[in-house]
Length: 510
Image 1 (tube, rainbow, N blue to C red):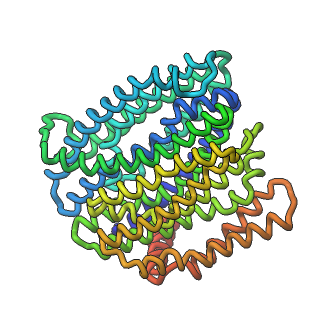
Image 2: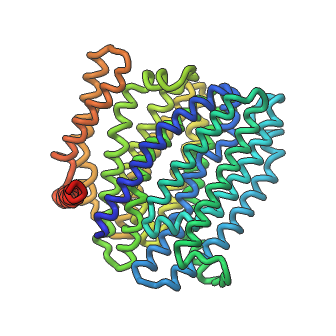
Image 3: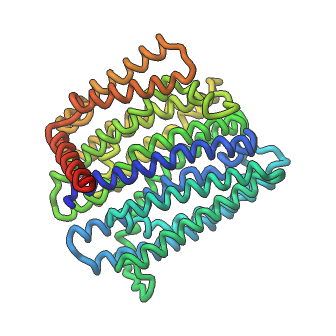
C-alpha cells in the first residue's frame, strides 16, 4: 500500500471509529449530567476537569515519541527506534510521578483558599482530585506506547481501544443512574479505573507486536533522553499553555459566577472536543508521513502534507461546526433535558475559535517534524496564555461571562499569523502558496455553507430542523469543496484512492 493510500485508509478507519464513539460519548454525557446534577457536574468539570484534557495532553506528548520513531523509521534505523522508546518510557514515568507529586502538594491550597466550592461538597471534590491524579499518571505512562502505535500507523488498534473507552464511559454513566449516594466519588474512581485498563491494553499489545517496545534490559542514554526531553519539554510547554487557557477560564468563571456556570462551560467543551475529533483524527493519520518525509529530507512533501492537513482539518470541522453554530439552541434542547444558562453561546464561540485554529493546524506538525519548536512554543504559547488576563479584565468590568471568549477568538487570530511567520522562518514555508492553497481555496465553500444555513434557519420553522440544516449544508459544502476547494494534486489523490476502492469492491463481489 502506498503512503498516500495508507493515510486515506487510516483516516477512514479513524472516522469509522468516530462515528461509533461520538454518539455514545454525547449520550453518556447526557446521562452523567442527569445523574450528577448541574452542581456536581460543575464540580467535576472544575476539579476533575483535567480528565477532559488528558486526551489532548497525551496526544501532544505522544507526538514527541512518535516524531523520533517516525524519523528513525524514515532512516531505517531499528536501534534508534529501540533507544527512543526505552528512554521515552523512563522519561514519562519520571515526569508523570513528578507532576502528580507537585499537584498533590497543592491540594490544601486549592480547596481551602482558592476554589469557590460549597463547604458540604469539598470532601467529595478532594476525592475527585486524587482519583484524577491517578488517571494522570496512568495516561502519562501510556504516552510512549501510543506514540509507537501512531508511528507505525497502526490506527486500527487505536480505534478499537477508543471504542472500548467510549463503551466504558457509557457503562459508567449507566451505573451512576442506578446509584443513590455519592455518585460523584464513584464516577471519579471508575474514570481512573478506565484509564488503568486502557494503559494495560496499549502496553500488552505494543510489547507483543513491536520489536522496539521491549521493557527488558532498558539502557538509559543520557544524550537520547536530553534530546527527547528537550523536544517533549517544549511540546509540554505548548500543551500546558493551551491547558492553562482552558482550565484557567474554568477557574475564572468559577470565581466570578460559581460552579453552576462551570456546567455550561463543561457541556460546551464536550461539544467542542467532539468537533475536534474530525480534525485530530485526520492529523493523527497524516503525522507519521509528515515526520517520515522530514526524516528522508523531503521538505517539499512535508510542507505539502502540512498544508493538506490544515485545509482538510478546517473542512472536516466546518462541515459540522457551521450548521451547529446556527442550530446550537435546538441541538442542546434535543440532547439535554436541562440546558444550563449560557451553554449555547459558549459552544458557538468556542466552535468559532476552533474553526480559526484549524486554518493552521498542519503547520504545528510541520514544525514538529523539523524538531525546532522552541520559538514556536514560546511565542504562540505566550499569546494563548494572554487570554486569561484579558478575560479577567472583561469580567472585572462587569461584562457577561461569554465575553471571556472574545479574548479567546481575538488571540487565536494573532496565533494564526504567528504560526505562518514562524513556519516560514524555520521550514521555509512559502506564504503566498499557503494563502492560496488553504485560505483562498476555503472562501467559496465557507460562504456556501454559511449562506445555506442562514437560508434554512430563517425560512424553515420545523421540529428537528437541525437535521435539515446539517444535511443540506453538508451536501452543498461537500460539492463546493470538490469544485472550488481542492487543488489539482488533491483531486488526483482522491480519484486514485476511489479507483482502488472500487476495484477491491468489484473483486469482493466477484
